[in-house]
Amino acid sequence: MNPEDLKRDVLAANLELCRRGLALFTWGNASGIDRARGVVAIKPSGVPYDAMAADDVVLVDLDGKVAGGRYRPSSDLETHLCLYLAFPDVGGVVHTHSTYATAWAQAGIDLACEGTTHADYFHGAVPCTRRLTDGEIAGAYEQETGMVIVETIRQRGFAALAMPAALVHGHGPFAWGTGPADAVHNAVVLEEVARIAILSRGVASPQPIAQTLLNRHFLRKHGPGAYYGQDRTNHP
Image (cartoon, rainbow, N blue to C red):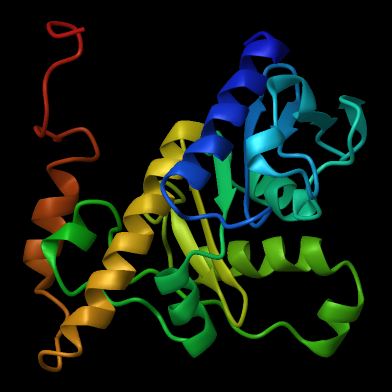
């Protein structure tokens, strides 16, 4: 992909976070990667969404060295890079402090799969990481944040695109996908299922859905046997 196209895609992803109400002020960030070129494009640190243009998006290499752009990259860059390096299928990463998903992260518990809305996107409970240690916080904090996400996804036995999100304990949600737009889509869905889960607790004490129902809903949209939607070869 041309780097300018990647920057435009990443700008669109960041603006969509704002439009969807997932990012207030300068909170949150979205990035995308061109693996062939070894280049990541990411939101500049502290730049308001309503003032951002494609030229403001920062290009970095996989070591975090700035390769283009006049601003410093997001302070969460090292977390994004950690996810890209750990999960080769990931093409976009999003971090927000969206209200309901952040509430679950602050509670420090997994977001259980209690309905088919959740199961359509996440193949199980969205995991919450362990707390970072004092040493991890005092050290390479942003990189350690990425490492604890990777640790959690691997320990739970998930493929990255089967569980395209995690809740960082006491911090907030990270989501990812095949590209920047897909990562935003998953972040929006995560916020909605977190909201539904909280609302359902005002009605009763919900229980996780059956594994058979979870599998059916997830697999009809994902994987080799998926049948949801239209055949793209016949319906461009």
